[in-house]
Figure (cartoon, rainbow, N blue to C red):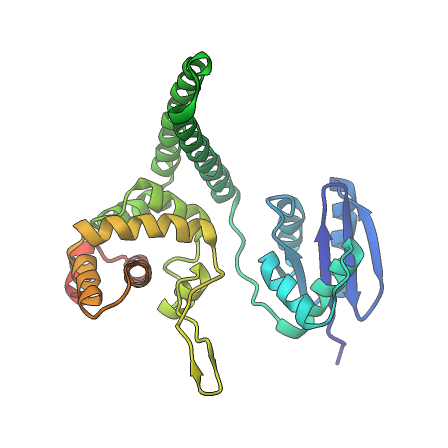
Length: 314
């Protein structure tokens, strides 16, 4: 029986640091020829698992190359790695050490590989990221306008107008991308049939949560970070909390839950029932996020329109 091989790769702009367990550590330049050579080198090792951190998109070319070669690769949240490193006593931090921690994480934790987003999905996610940046800049400029002195107020207004035009262009681009894809269009129409669910939420789910409709309710809630987690110790029974998961999806889902709590009959009744039970507003809204996500997951899994789902969840 061949030994299990685990690989950790730390990605930076100029260099890739690779650690193999059992084996050695080495580094290469971060460019296409070096990535191609690394893929062949790792393919010869037949690794059990390869783990990388999410690094704001810098990991995508390497991850795509590894997945295309049929190698088992997982991109994980950097917070998971930091917590694991602290628990393992790894306090020092260098790129080479980070790669070793990633390899150890792969061996101990064995995260499950998931299908990677295709090119179109990554492109949609990039447009969504740009949209989020525009919204943040627009909010900042509107706040700045409130305290701006007369000499610069005009320039701030000009910038706000430009940002609003850019936001309109981005929204049109998102709508066109979804309309051009038969699969996305079908999913978008199903999701937007739900009261309180709009184009920003559906495009975010399509781009950043491709697993929607393929996992169980518990799995999808945990993946997004809206599953309640215990915080108990000894005789202490702490409050259930939610954390981790995909922050971008969770932020947009939160706004969707606020709208649904007003206009969606199922979510509104659920929210009001929690409030009557004495739940805090934020706790009730988090529960609404989870319920809305589970409804959307069931709709895509069974290709069920809202009317049928509404009846089954009422």
